[in-house]
Length: 109
Image (tube, one colour):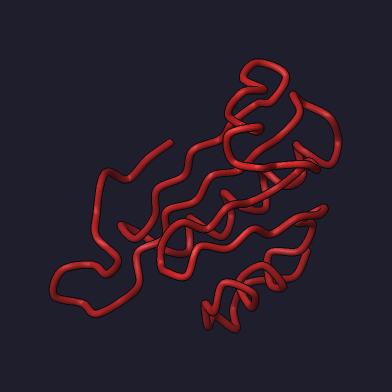
């Protein structure tokens, strides 16, 4: 899913634009949970995100090209600096904190 190509900030708002790549392994439990949590966080950023989900069972070369060694892994390409977040990604609130998104209304579940 994608909200389109954008720069590091949304025009006229000064708010950060998030370009994310989530590496998963099919519908394995941790991968499914990570996908749901990342999508939940993205929905809190209307017009400010682009998400590419890469299933390494289908496209393992993309994982190799991006030095992904564990699944799930979230690569934050924008805003800079580029970051890799590795692990279960089970809590939306924690992910928002790591991404620097301030939203006290999102549950941690």
